[in-house]
Picture 1 (cartoon, rainbow, N blue to C red):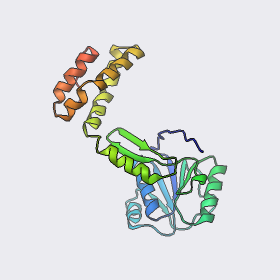
Picture 2 (tube, rainbow, N blue to C red):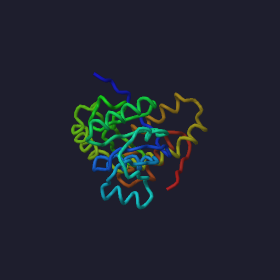
Picture 3 (cartoon, rainbow, N blue to C red):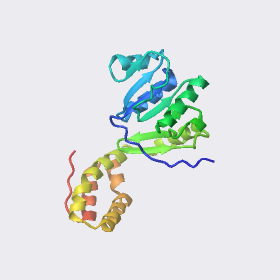
Picture 4 (cartoon, helix red, strand yellow):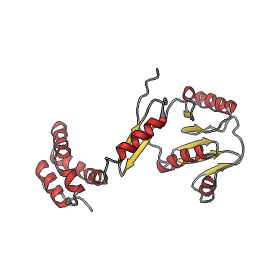
Length: 216
């Protein structure tokens, strides 16, 4: 059994290569673009959506089959073809280059796997089945999504603005840690969900011991 180490990777402005131009590749490209990656697709043909992204210069496109050396300089590689020989060649080259590589639906040829991802503002929840049943991860994501309201995204906006003044007023880390739990365990989230943000901010100010007013 493979024990994966869960981690979030910062892909902003990182060069990523996708081998393949079908629907699966399209989904991978969309996810990479959402994370700010610089994406290059290598494939003789593209889906209409990938053609559109190429025309809008959102991605680069090499209109041909993969060949050895194509992965040079890439931070991450995703191979989304149904050609076993190509999948093996991509896996071998990426490993030789010590790159992050995922050959879709071929767990033995992946040194990372992509989870089902739920995003709500700055809240990101990733669900993985270690590559054994991705469909279950998707269904669990759908269940959790029904329980996560927009108040969580707004709370994180507020929390992001609170971190610096809280650290300035309360230098001790352990004390700040306790205050964060008091805030999260209070009725602040419910007040935001109810549309009563002013009361929520009053509650935060009382907990931290100083008046706090975030930007809208």
